[in-house]
Length: 410
Image 1 (tube, helix red, strand yellow):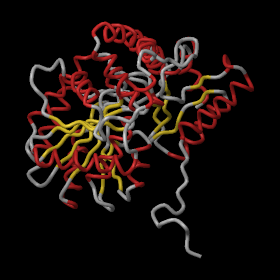
Image 2: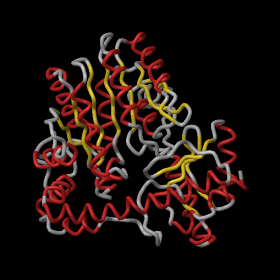
Image 3: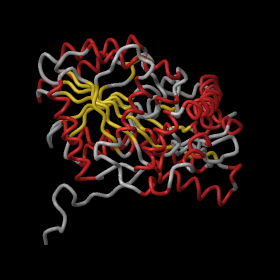
Image 4: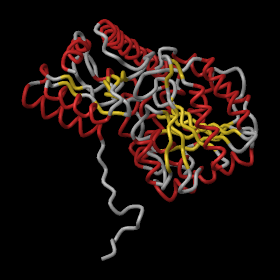
């Protein structure tokens, strides 16, 4: 008998390793008590008491937004004008040149990534992702019938520019177009942030490669506001104004993560290119997709982001509160990474961010190692090439000695 579903959807089963691991950790806490369990699964902020963090500087102002405004539809499928202006000012406001871009409101950074994959590539074409990367990149590509290939992310603890060039050139030669994902800064799952020189190498190369066909860089900046470099990292965006007409950068921004408003689902796709015709085509396609899939983004979340970031005293209060947690995550990272080096627990190069990843390149071995950790009430997430430790959610007291415990178990 024929299936009720189409060929692309028939047989789909979603197994999310993050939430699966989180459920196991929760069950262990019920059975053994919270103090006996290290839950390093969820990529969301928790304080030193193990309580989920929702910034007071964000959620107190939320109460001042009228119930009518919260209940209303967004004013535009592209996103409220005030929201788009707020995003522009938040990302580019301290840059001394104008960034010519188009902005599309999306449900989280995930919506920006998904919409870009859908509208840039045809089914059967290939997207290029890092060898260590966020799991849903694969899910989204498969949803649209797109294949994936990896560039090796690291060589000698630095960005592997030569393999990046090799893979991009190979894909360009095969399909006449390149779409590549670069998750930077605060890479998920390794915590790597590229240097300015590494980015220069990438952009010089794509300028050259674009002589063969269109090149699109999807820059996933989900954790940009938790960079230890603060607003100064955003000077990086100036580099995108030097790109050839046949290069486009799409920035996937997550206001959800910036505001500790994960469930509010707000973000944006920001399109930068000197090719104004293609820029307008991209935004038109994104608006069309939005109407057909999610319609409009959460109005209250857009209003909240604009309110907090565009009101001077609210913004200052928010920046202070956020910095406290940026510093806290840095302290947690220093504990785990330092101790990992002391006991020769091999991790990928870490610089900043929510995660550290333990190397485990063999998939069957990785599953076995993760199972051993779970048997000892240590819960991580299996990712490409390793086991991800979400230091954003583990108190410092539980990180002390954790690297040695993991090394001994593994």
